[in-house]
Length: 74
Image (cartoon, rainbow, N blue to C red; front, side, top):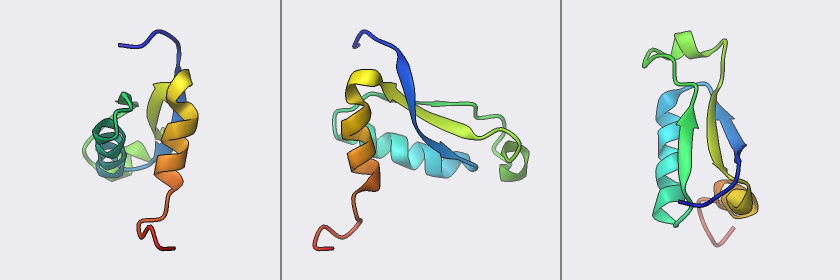
């Protein structure tokens, strides 16, 4: 595991989206963790967003992956 502090790279209101993004980062070699998951019922997570965090050193790469178009030809 890398040394350093975690940094929030994205916020979500539903756990499914957060975990999909986490999986994509993990598949690309970027350690990621979901924080703040209160409930599997989306309406209970609206007050406090679910945060996807990565190490500071991986922040730029994670942000680039999360913002990349789904279709690489775009």
